[in-house]
Length: 115
Image (cartoon, helix red, strand yellow):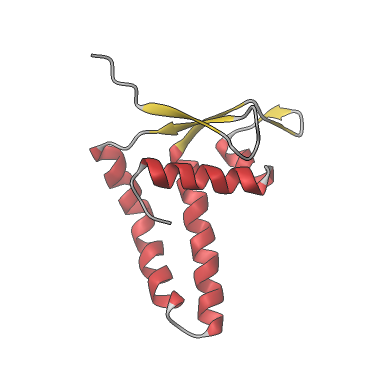
């Protein structure tokens, strides 16, 4: 048996682009849980608060999306940003927002996480 530890996700928002997403495993789930737990607890608390706290919760939700992309996207294929092959970091910093959001959702879906 040959187990592939990543899956290719073909973009629906940017035709011709695909994202290589790391599959979830026990070790990777543990690593992700450690990275996201503090942010998730703060997000849940602030989301139930005042409008200023809800604004902070929205910022934390964006940080969680960024974490998902940097943690789960192993490679971006078929996209150059400013003349250079795209990476998870450059996709986050300078890439098309719709593709970034699609990447975050693809990682969350691969990990069995909700929005």
